Image (cartoon, rainbow, N blue to C red; front, side, top):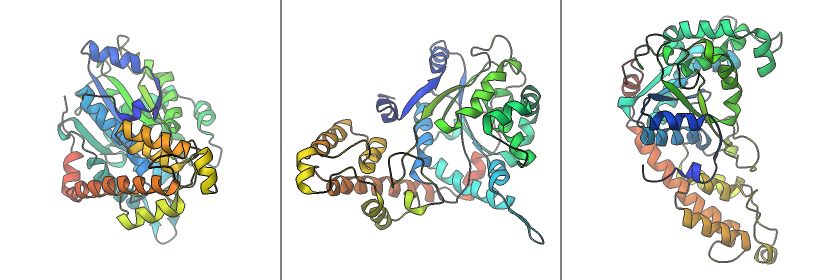
Length: 359
């Protein structure tokens, strides 16, 4: 790569744990791998879901390393699944969402020869020895205190954090990473949204029990955290798949994208033209400008829009003009993504999910 990713330049990824140690491993040519994931809760992913995958794709190119992508269909069933007498449960529904979401992830441009994408339901047997060791190392009180489970939680919810923790250890991938036992010293870097950090704080607390004493990070996974991608209704909070008007989905048409931005993107502009010209917009709460910070590559254009919109001057003095620029950018981005996704068939997904050595 020739330049830092815009997410780093603009502090979209804003905090880390032991990233400096990962950089040392890279400089010393010690092996590392990337780990990220997705909980398949809907058939269509939205722009917010793209953020960690775009960052991970850049990191894979920059670091030239293997990547494992966990699809937590088990978690979504345990937390959102239903059972009906005479009909049964809907576990297979979440397994089908894994395939659909995998198509969007593959369309992000990962390196096939260095990427393994897996469903927990299908792959958990390989990870099981690692999961059992994590279960042995973490008490129920610790899990309850971290995640807030009470006596009404099904036992799967209480057990699941170890399943999300397991890919942090190369031994969860004896074939994919050729990690046969605890002497493997591959270090793990996890790009994720900040709300995933509790899982990996738990992991880091017990990591030393699962690795050789010479592991460069003491077994602890390193992390790099992103801010939440703001919903259309306001710059604070988290976008939701269950609220169609809070998000732009990767399946949306150009017309629907334009309609959502025009009608639902919260504006930091002033109430009247005179006030806007006098004071400019409040960029901190303006969703259109914040979305441009995530997806506009050109720093100079973004700075210009910010200056003009924030002062009520120049070409981009008004909310309508900034929204129009965002609409154009998102229509192009989503259209290109849809073209790439259309090439990803179910058979292609199975190739990416086939267990094979990446190192």
